[in-house]
Image (cartoon, rainbow, N blue to C red; front, side, top):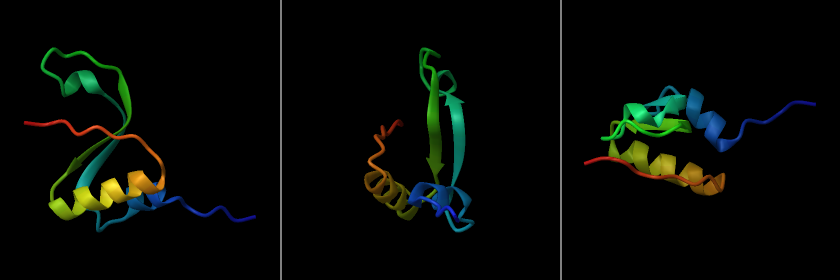
Length: 70
């Protein structure tokens, strides 16, 4: 039986996605106090379109997300 890719899996391999995806990324690399364990996925987007697409996929997958940044 063939397995179908989830929307998130499809996004991870889509060459048109304007950003970088890091699985199991230590959050200590991205916080002021250098604390934090691994995030299932750490994503850095390069456009508003990539961000809105990512949020849509997270909603479809019922995956919680947190936005970090200045």
